[in-house]
Amino acid sequence: MKARKLHLFLLTALALTLETAHAQSVSLDFSNPVGTPTGTNGLGGMSYYRTSTLDFLDVATSGPVVLDLRVTASTWGGMTFGSAANSGYYADYSSNTGEPNDDLGVYHTATTTGLGGVHYDLSFYLGGTGFTTPYTVGQLDLLIYDVDGEASQSEKLRAYTAEGLVSYRTGSNAASVTPSIFTGGVLFTGPGTNYAETDVSGAFILTYENTSHFRLDFESTTTGTVPNAVFASIDGDLSMLNGDLSGFGPVTSAPEPSSALLLAVAGMMMQFRRRRTSSRSIRRPG
Image 1 (cartoon, rainbow, N blue to C red):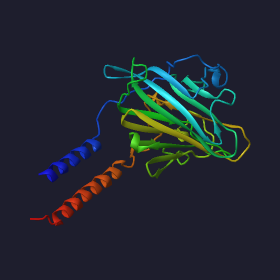
Image 2: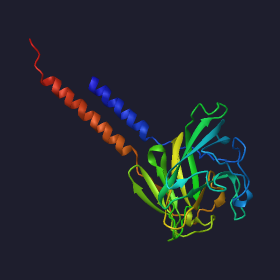
Image 3: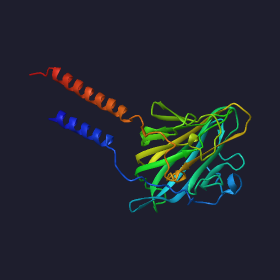
Image 4: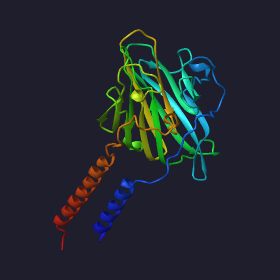
């Protein structure tokens, strides 16, 4: 009886883990950052924030619920964040090249040659709780753009399935971002040529489900003169595309993070059966 209950419990846990919520995508608006800008120089004369953590109020609504967002940056390798002129977050990003408002630009700098990058952690909270109550969002569709690169500097981004990544779409032309699978997620490699920010060659769409936190890992390898700046941006409502997805290929499912869970469940079942068999083989004194 106990074995049956354990079996049912494990199957129920597995089903809940694998269940996909069919919810309307939540749109992100990066136009309401907390704090005073560091300056208004640089890209298009827009305000930027040179800080490792930037909070956003009223970044989205999920049904009747208002959400806040905290973005935290940490650098590694030969990359710095917030040290080069005009580097930092560009909240409510826009420019004269066609991007709409409300995006989030991220501008960092390679100060040494070789591999380096920036971890960007995005965490959702229930609005009005002072960033103390995490909130799980049903679905997000993000356009990551300008991940292209140049002859002396590659540009890449890693996204992780354990944090809710369920699918992606990349550009459909030969010079578009190239996806490749690694253990735990998908790596998107830029074409190695500098394209306009409105060109989908350096853009791709990520879809997340049931997530309260996820990490976007921007990385690059620099072989030319340093310092060399790297810029990319996050469009939280796909508004830059204006509804036109013709430049993208089909939706591709991300590798299932559940495979590890399946192995874990199988291992637990095997251990249970071994222990049960072992206990039966022990002779008890009569």
